[in-house]
Length: 314
Image 1 (tube, rainbow, N blue to C red):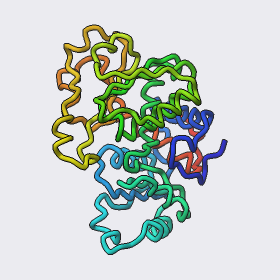
Image 2: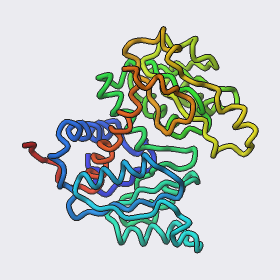
Image 3: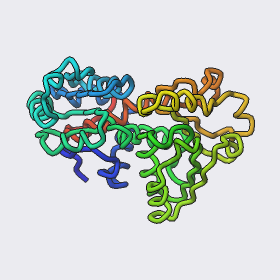
């Protein structure tokens, strides 16, 4: 399995074996980060962020810097040649001359895919519209694997904006391929998991899917509770956002019946969907999840660049 030179646009670009390869290297990096501090010496990562981002952009930058590489790019497209009307094709051609790999976030679905068709270097999708967010999926999988010790036999609930939530769409499509996974979708009617995706899950994987609007009625039977933000930027109507934005607020009192080893995850940023009094609960792992994002991006960058990761710790 050679990932060198490949693009990562969709999490389905990776087979389960390749996924395991990325996670296995990420776990080695978690255990001994310093051993990998120079594997990307002389390499440059380009970061083209057409849409605001904190965690994804910084974690990519942190990942490259922690491996001895360098980073260049923009976090505000209005301050780049994009503002002059430059096309994605031309931008990526130029970025590919300056960098050895490029990560792109874009508000339009399919933009990273388009970029990959013109890029001379690997393109990593850092999130495109409400479509996919494959490196968040890798982050989520590493979190579950490290903290639950497995990626199978899990009952996983997603709560909040399941219509626009690209992190949800990405993670569901990957978990569905693993043995004995059950899904619980918790959302208002207006933000339900897309019907065509649900039908695909059932028809392709014969997977059990439960839909409800009531978090507390199902929380006692969950292994993973994946909370998501109601995404203001995806609404066309401000009034609809205001009406729905506080549909779910996870407070400590609502965890009384939850399993003691349930994981509470969130891709961040949160707004109001998890109360601060949950942060000290042992089940709340969303900040640890953000930390794992650095390691999984370190592993991914190293493998796409094809650098030597056969290192020995001190």
